[in-house]
Image (tube, rainbow, N blue to C red; front, side, top):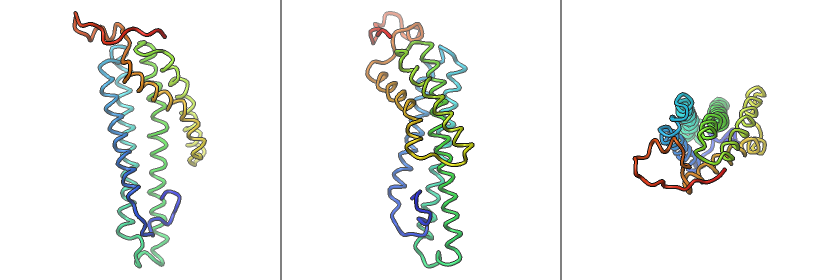
Length: 215
């Protein structure tokens, strides 16, 4: 759809767009959920930075919702006007322009929400986890290295005025993606390492849930 400027004039299906929008809504809500879940733990390291991480996740979700709304609005226009005789002639150019504007809004909100914000999130959460040693330090180091690369790539795109090719965008996002994946897998499999932070949250007499793991 994003690669066909006249999609709004067609009568092609839009199920894939709806499914994609639904999945992005899940991503937005999951991002907020993970931040809220981690906040009670990481705030013991630095409450200001932890609160900033939650705020960044909420802002990221808001921008994702904005992009999804833009695409859903385009679907509505396509359903109401696309492929009809009334869309022909003089109205066709205006409809194509309208469709292109909706796609442009989605592209830029995607760049800011799912490219820039993950870099900022990696800086905030990576700093908290590196300092607290709640996970092996190699994991947050991956995020702290990848975050500046991704942020610089996004800034370059903003000043360049166009969205980069998918291959370039994927390369810049790879370290942050690896950080998020490794962190998620570690927390699911191992959980937090024993530390003064987690000890303060554990009732006295409760045996530790996990054994210490060297960095």
